[in-house]
Image 1 (cartoon, helix red, strand yellow):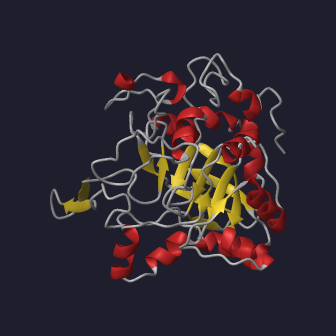
Image 2 (cartoon, one colour; image 1 turned 90 degrees about the vertical axis):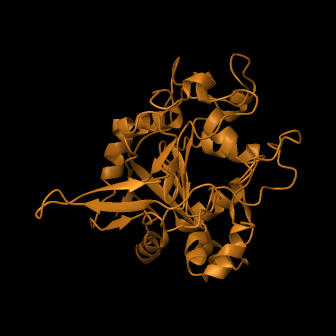
Image 3 (tube, one colour; image 1 turned 30 degrees about the vertical axis):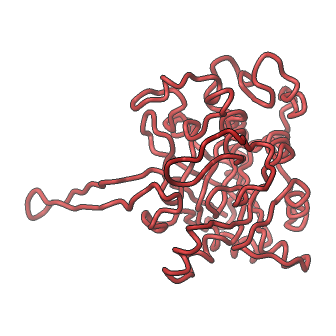
Length: 335
């Protein structure tokens, strides 16, 4: 199995940097790097992940487009699918209003900038433009996400230890929770793993009535990763390549009161969700770690519980769209 890379500084060492923003991985993987933690994906990690396949059973981790309509973010209208024919024996189609992060998605490096230091790697704002290649999601498409996924099933873990848990309530998940859940599931981290965090949020939300969903969208509440430097250290020091979840943002919502990432002087956005205080900014802009949101994890979780194996081959293929901010995940687990 892939060993831990010894040439990577600890998060504590990242915080002490003077040659780059403190707490950033800028330049750790080489001058001008734009892949961030996807650098933890190697031929060795891919070969190890392929050897996890035993039954060949495949689990679709995507929800259909327009599943979360009206938009959870408040800024993305539904996609409109049209079909046309160029003769009686031909069909073709197109999409209008196709928001790349509207359903099961991967947030790319362009999705968030740090309020002080800017985009990952110091890429200048004027380079983050349509058709510009810097930090575009096409970099992830070219790299290819083919690695070991590790499921942390929060509902089953908390039920197993007899602790109350509400998938529609706020629970701030810290490093100690993740380690305890891993021990409960009988699995450990390897370099290049994807953290697959099941909160149960999506399944419960989609089971609500339209009226209940509308009420919830006005004040989204969800378990997820805590807004803390300890979580940043955990993700980095365990050499996680990507973190994905079945909730709106991987992290807990609403943001923890007094979040260390909150800027009291930042104005509220004109529309949609405020990102002030969120973990998104340091995770994406400083560490270069991509996030996946609204993944379909319930069937996979049932399979892991049935066979007792919480590790699997995980694949994801973002759209090869130069300069895109994010992409549908096109994700699958194979056991």
